[in-house]
Length: 267
Image (tube, rainbow, N blue to C red):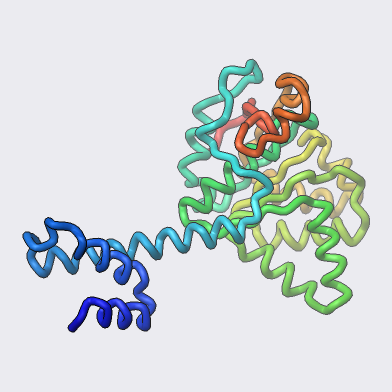
């Protein structure tokens, strides 16, 4: 069978990695020295690598991360109480498998969004479904979903994703329906998924900031149980690095960079 025909058949079977690998490997002088079993084994590896790369690209696209970020790029030099051990623990993503939460708090510009997106990036690369959203946009989407009848479907999606990242939580006081939606989300995710919540509001103030004592107690109980608390402190990274030009660089941690000062490690 001609090579072109074989490649066409592989494409029809959706074995795109093998099809690409076949053409490339036949062009290598060393391919004639391989046994048939070794050659087929390499093609199978090509297909697996192709599918792994496609899955990763899909996970990163669906995650909708606000910015490119990586745990490896976090600045440990700035004196903000960073614990490298906590970063290493988070990098293992074991906390996601254990359905635990990471709660980030700190002033504007200190880097909450960066660490949240870095955690999301690490999760996607480890094969976990991930979704990043800002709280104001989340509540807007939920309100629109009420109008078109897809509210329960959206809540189900938020509960099923393996890592949910909610940024800018408690920027403004929650309305009654926002509190109830937050409770539905954290209740649905409790012991079923991992959640990252980032907020300018100190974690100790979340209970009064949520408003309704009964709902606040239920929400905080589910969020704080077995959670890793990361409380950032210090001056804005944007001011430290000389203004908006540096802060707007999506490939630099200084856009929304941080170091983290944990009040407790991952248990």
